[in-house]
Image: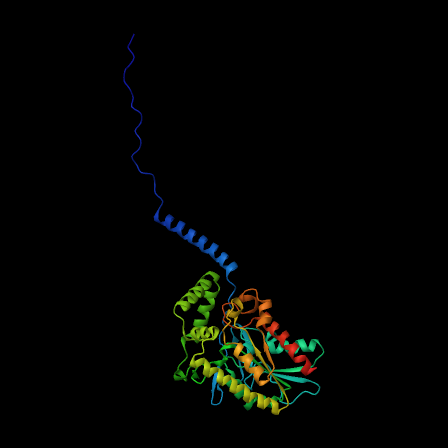
Length: 370
């Protein structure tokens, strides 16, 4: 017999070849998908956290220089207030022309003010002046409403407008809507070649890039992403808090009750203006009502030393001028900024805010116009 072979076979040696690696293209694709999914999730979350901003459509309403009023709306134009289309009539006011002659059997209420009374960012039917007329009409009180407000006006400009033009409407009641920044001086404001308000030294200058259709299109495209726009606005707010500009410093001084020379002079001009207006309104046998719109920041936290509206209330009481402070009314209905104010905007009420203000004003007016 043959002896069994004693040869031992070695186990197969493992391959020394490295496993195949994903390609650079596959890695890039995976990264792209991850980024897109992450951005999508963050965008969805942002839509829950951040309200939708108003787009700004081109062209925005244009101003013209005015020797007595500093500036006024360019008459006979169709433009936008944020995204709301508005017609400025031949007299330079919002909406259809109201005849100077009274309509028999109707009372007439004339509104003076700035961008709040004008109705920045709200439709014609939502503006406080129109809501007052509609609410009174619903109670069987026939009233004509004349909205003479011009965005960016201060109290002196409003009084000057009434002296030159407003008194021709022969109103039964003159309602003046006041905002905290109405004490700001506007004598150094000019109008550029495109109809934008600028520093007086820039008056007549070529149009700014910010007023171009391309700039509006870019900003509106950015606003479609709640994540990008919301983050940008939060960054701006953070930066402004660290390095406040003139506007923010001015507002902080008002809220803190700091009686700087600028604020002291501003209040003196406002009070002198209201005394002038009171004399004119009295001469026509009409009534004057001052309405103070709240600072949104003051609805979020207390500013017990703020000069607005406390200084205005004290002045109105001393002069015997009827006064309506809307702050308590807004406080009762306030559930975050967007409940009563336009999103990503400092001071302008939304449709709900205009309606709330109108209902409070109607309660003041009813004994006078019924």
